Image 1 (cartoon, rainbow, N blue to C red):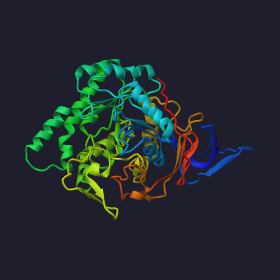
Image 2 (cartoon, rainbow, N blue to C red):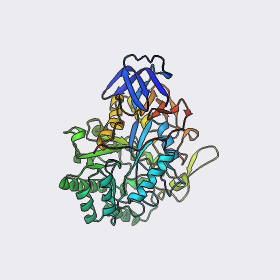
Image 3 (cartoon, one colour):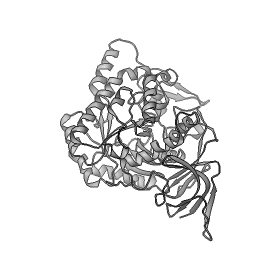
Image 4 (tube, one colour):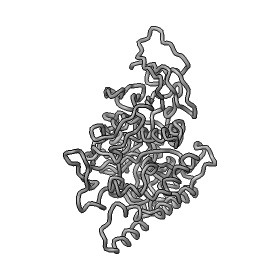
Length: 460
């Protein structure tokens, strides 16, 4: 494997930024020092002056659609997009076709990733009302599986879990982290029926009214109650409301918390006001809501009530979202699909650059971005030897130029679905290099896809 020496780069790690040299050898971080000389060894030297070295982001919630839904995306295309955006590891959700709710189906996904993923990978075990025992079989593999996913709200296929007996069994017996999507199905159905009774056509602007704050809070509160009852390790995904924040605390260090929470970049970036401009392009579950929620999420992120930042990357084709792209590249809505577009949006290529744009605005420090997208995810899931820039750790690293703006456009989007809700946005910082296990997969626009990522391991 090639040896790399990154010279005089600003290393962002564990709350500080320090100029140093960093030596990468045999897939690991060999040495970090003010000056490193390498003697006679054949080394590729990278000049890091003026740039920043970050630990690769770890995205704990993505939907890469393989197997079964590969017209939208697959593990290869979406992992490539992730790497281009500085995400070196991902944890993927079970709502593929078929859903991954047995060990056999889960291992099929690992097999695909082993052959095609450019980033490191792990996959959640899925649950349904009927498969509690299958899900709990993951207890025997707790060092090799990131967690158990429970959709405590609307989902595709048979993945909705609303049977209290199933929930009690899984929360009571799981030895793995349980990650939950929390929206109350009863409240959602009541809200939808009330709006339909008005007799007017529904649009994307109605989505946060149907999937409102109360639906999120009631479900999250129920999950927290179950976790406290059984001392379960609970991680609630994509918090989207100010009301839910009362369920979380910053009184303990992350490593001592039994209940943690994630916020997604789209809930930090968009508000319900953006439906007028983007419509179903920002339709997702849980919904993007009124602006006071976004302000509260930012406050909770900065004071550590919210522990990690992720994407919930969920690609659909433009047609599935209710749009088409014209010959001039513009995207226009398809008449009659103003409400029926699928929920979910693709973000994994742009999540880190988007958060770095908020650094430029003074909203958050670069050290805090690294904490929330790398360190905290590694700590939350107990990922082995990743998420930090430490000697002996895997060399999952990203070089960022904070003064190289780029504009998100159809011709530079790597998602298989070929669109982004951020199209036309100019971000002030660019990822110039991404190392995965010491291998330079992406450097200044040049790809080396000769090595795949590795399966994540967990210290439990």
